[in-house]
Length: 546
Image 1 (cartoon, rainbow, N blue to C red):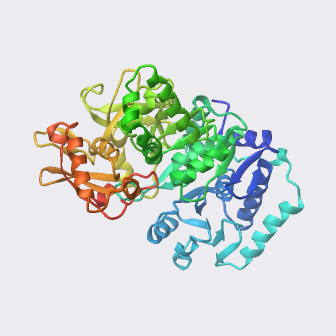
Image 2 (spheres, helix red, strand yellow):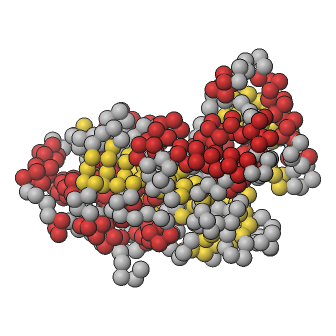
Image 3 (tube, rainbow, N blue to C red):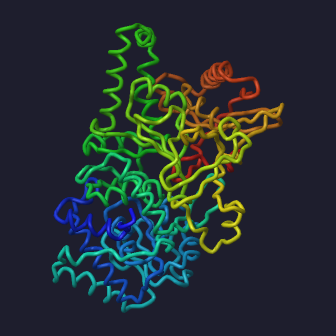
């Protein structure tokens, strides 16, 4: 690792794979590594002509695409700080990020540029369209000519691979300012340094099963570090071929794309995996005849093998592993996946760690865990007995951010006095450094006799009940209630009307409470008419509903 740098990883990847396919926009164009390199160099020349210097910031606003990736790499290769903005942010948050980050340029999808208040953005020089790099707005008319000249130069002068190189960064230099939208609703700019990116990528290269030429589908938001690192930045260093899905990733669309691309490694969040399990697997295994057969020796083995094959085919059939992160996976889903020996693993991280904290390969991990602490990181549990008594998970090491941009107070509050990052997550650890997460510290509910109640664990059980799409467990006057958004699709398939829904939910409640200790039992299910608002990782913004 000592003789490697982020610059060397990317320079080597581009030069070795110059004539190989790099990026494909799903149902769109293909690009070789040489094509992307030419776009990157054109953007470099444009930045230079526009007066941008190392350390300046540019923002990118849009769904996943080859041009989004090219803009990101144009910053990473030239010493410019990139500020990814989630396309789902509202107008207020979008403009706050543009102004707070001091971005000088923004590249945005044409459908999203109406969110940008150019007149009130003091530092912003120009707004460009992601689709074709055309100029959308500027305060300096000369920029139009500089943009045209920059792209014309590399049309007339063929770029040779030996002349394409990434600039070096110092380990503590900020490469990315990632503005998070957490379940608490507060947006902060996480400063991710070169050492964090390098450490995360090197770990992935050493532990995740990808090789040059392998295929990846990028559907998690690239403006969030989980998708950014493991569906994009890490695969590029190996010379992989990435297909970008720019549409909203419903399970139906994702499975269609997986079937066509057949990716070698899949990254996902629990919500999508659980929906696929619930729609594709649960209806089969809950049939009375199948339930009997699953208890019959001999037939059980054959049946589970067929279910596993059907599930693998849903994901394209060629993957080495599915890595699930961003939130806890339902215990029932995990238990069934392990029963059929499905190739999946659960990782754990946060934006402030760029993102990785723990992971282990599917055939080496511990059931119920979020993986093992990764290389170049340390973990401790703020508890008198970290192996048995739940406490806050605290970490330190190479992956950690340098702080929150222009928010010293928040930075101080996030670290302990002796320099450990407070994750806000509760859990325990075993002697082999496997982390077991129980929930968020701010979500924990104190039971009537002082018991610790982790609502996420109850919600995972409720979400697997019939006709439940999603839910939030909250405390009200000393009792637990569950707010439920119904699964209207399942209701239609089961011929359940809105008038019959309360009785079905009461049956759900009784079934649930039979499995829970008395202090965790739900006193009522309350229906809500709209889906819960979510973060980019598809976690429900709980602060709005509890």
